[in-house]
Amino acid sequence: MGICWPKPAKCAHASSNNFSGSAKTHGNTKQESTSSAQKSPLEVSNNEFIASKPQTPVSSNLKADTSVSSNLKSFSFSDLKNATKNFRSETLLGEGGFGCVFKGWIDENTFAPTKPGTGIVVAIKKLKAESFQGHKEWLAEVNYLGQLHHENLVKLIGYCAEYENRLLVYEFMPKGSLENHLFKKGVQPISWATRTQIARGVAQGLSFLHSLDANVIYRDLKASNILLDSDYNAKLSDFGLARDGPTGDNTHVSTRVVGTRGYAAPEYVATGHLTPKSDVYSFGVVLLELLSGQRAMDDERVGFSEETLVDWAKPFLSDNRKVLRIMDTRLGGQYSRKGAQAAAALALQCLHTDPKNRPSMADVLVSLERLHASKGTPRTPQHSQAKLDHHGMKHVNSPHKTRVSTANSL
Ligand SMILES: Nc1ncnc2c1ncn2[C@@H]1O[C@H](COP(=O)(O)OP(=O)(O)OP(=O)(O)O)[C@@H](O)[C@H]1O
Ligand SMILES: [Mg+2]
Image (cartoon, rainbow, N blue to C red; front, top):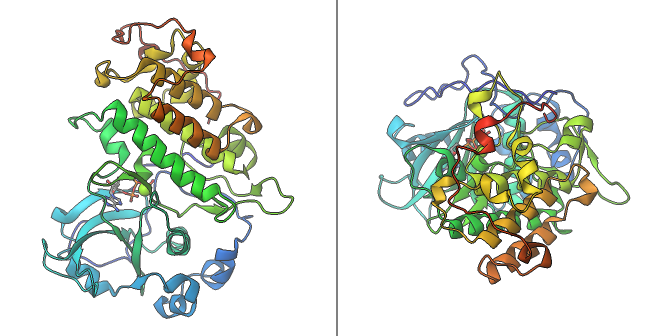
C-alpha cells in the first residue's frame, strides 16, 4: 500500500554539518508513493520550492513569503551549531524519520545561541540528508506551524534553510513524547488521570485543526508525535504530512497514501480519500494505546503478522463485560472502571469502519470533557448497566498474548 517503510537509518551524531551524504531512506512512515496531490493554498504560495529541487540558499525565498516568515525566526546554521554544542550526541533528544532532534539553548530575546543552562531551551530538528521529500515536509511544517497557533500544538520558533541544511527550532517539551511514556522500558507508567488529560489535549488540538477557521487534516497522529510539557499537557508536533481539508462541496481530499501503519484509517489507505475522519480513526488508535499500553503495531510481530492493535482490541471493545481486559496492567488497576469503559466505547466509535459513523473531533472532545467532569464515571445507560469484570485481571487470559493474524487491516 505504500505505507510500509523500513526503519530510519541511525543519525550520524555530532560535529559534522554534512547534509550531503548519500540520501537515506526517509523515515519509517512518510514516503508518498504517487504524485497527484492537490495543492493547498500554503503549498501554492511556495509552489516553486515544491515543484523543483530546492534552490540554495532558500532563506531569502522564504523571507519573501511574509505569511511564513513573519512569525518565525530565520536562524543561521552556525547559530544552531553553537546552540547545540555542534550537535553533540549528549544533546540528542531523539531520532525520527526526518532526522535527529537536539537540545539547544538560545537567548529568549535575541534568539542568539547561549551557553548550555542559560537562556531558553529549544528542540532543534535537523533533516538527515538532502532529500526532496524531507524538504517538502520541512516546508509544510514551516508553513502550517508558522500560521497555526494553539495551546495543544507545539510552538515552532524558527527554521534554518541554508544551502542543503534544513532545520526546525521548537519550544522544548520537557516530558518528551507520549510514545516514550507508554512503551519505553523502565519508564514510570503514567497514571489514568494523566492519560485522560493527554487524550483531552490531543482532542483539543485536532478539534482546532478541523475547525472551519483552520480546516487542516493532520494525517500523522501517533504516540511519537504527541509531545508533553512539564505538566503532561499534550501538544501535536510534526506537520510535514498535514493537508488542507476539503472545501466547498468536496467531501474529501484526494492524496497519495502516506501515514503510519496501525494508525491510518482503512478507507484512506484503500482509496487515498482523506477527510477529517481519517484523523478521528487515528485518534481512536491513540486512545487504545492509552488504555492498553500496547503499540498500534507490535514490532515483535512484524514479518510474522499484519495484526494491528485495532484488530486485536476491537472484539473486546464491543463487549462491555470484556472491555477491561485490554487495560494496561501497569496501571495496577488504578483507574475508574466506568471511565475506562466509556473511553473504550469512544475509541470503538472512532474506529468505525465507515468514516460517516465516526464522531467528529468536536463530538469526541465533548465526550472526553463529560468523562472528565464526572471524574471518569459517565452516567450513560449503556455503561451503567454493565456488569464489571475485576480490573485486576490476569493477562494470562489476555487476548493480547494470543493475537492472531486477521490481516484485514493495513
Ligand atoms: N519539541 C521537542 N521537545 C522535546 N523533545 C522533542 C521535541 N521534538 C521531538 N522531540 C524528541 O525527539 C524524538 C524524535 O522526534 P521526531 O518527530 O523526529 O521523530 P518521531 O516522531 O519519533 O518519528 P517520525 O519521524 O515518524 O515523526 C521524539 O520522540 C521526542 O522524544
Ligand atoms: Mg515526530
